[in-house]
Image (spheres, rainbow, N blue to C red):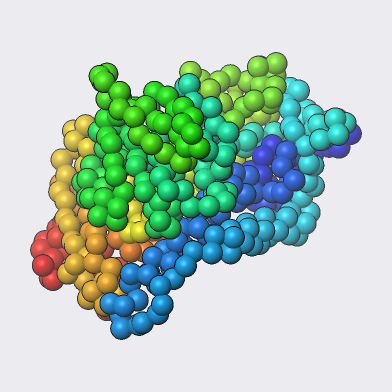
Length: 467
């Protein structure tokens, strides 16, 4: 029986970062992982492999349609799907091997098997061969992440009816792809296959894509995706998928009820969200409370109702984002080491890695209106940005939202090439309680895409220079 200061169950971004930070702070630490490789959903079957395919498909699109405008003549590119998948696999391997190296470097014990909480201070690890061992720990952190949300009446087989996992493993480009869900995952993977030649239809229950994101962003971004060839059926629900010859027939009804319409598909991607993963964890027996959505209940310091048991990441409330889980992992490690760990939930950026990218941090206009906050907004289009013009990436805009009385920046929203990188100057500004004037008066290098962020800030407290 092994004795540890901390045992972390799950090695996704939240779990492995928590373990590393704890080890750096002098805690004897172990992790428990059911997969053969570390890194969780994100590194193995989520964020990392999807970004590899997104980038590869963007390069294919650029070679086929963008090069000529730059005076580069090449023959028509062909999709080598096995080669693309090899790039994806190499990317995943490099990342998971990197995490394994960090475990060794930080002297963290890795226990491969399914973790189960037996109660405060005890974690049972069951290996694939059925053998079990018990780890003793002063503290346990549950970081088991999330799983695919199933669609009632539709069975995922990962061949024709796929989740994000199967959508990253398709052996050929589908002729017709129906994506159920217009959120981040559905739009990212839908855009991959759209670029590679699929006819993509997105069915979304709400009346807008990207659910909680700023309405202005959603509307304009949908227009861009439509221009790229994607079709949208909003305020609609999928009520069934049936086999039809070698293909599928998808029943789609208005969200509020009405006559069904049949859509033909070769592949159906179910991407309606994710749910906390607590299966087999033994939480009920251990007395750990869950909320009405199946998430582990925690207090402001990540503690459950059972002493010595904590939880972070997708398995608790808040945005299901890898970097949110990472920051929580650092915070709880610091707390357990006697320090003051903290996460500022008002400044957690979110990015959609399509082309163009969508990035957001802080409040949306809808949230500010609902909260009765008086605000002012400034906007600047990339079409007026010199670097964007030079690169033929003029789609999109930057929008800054600031408090009407204090000018403190409350939210920033970007649609455009490289938006996921640009959002961080807004995050840093907001972390320090900065104003739109602070941002607008900060010298930005010319010519850069980031000048559009400065101009949007200028438009918020005064007037932009270039529009």
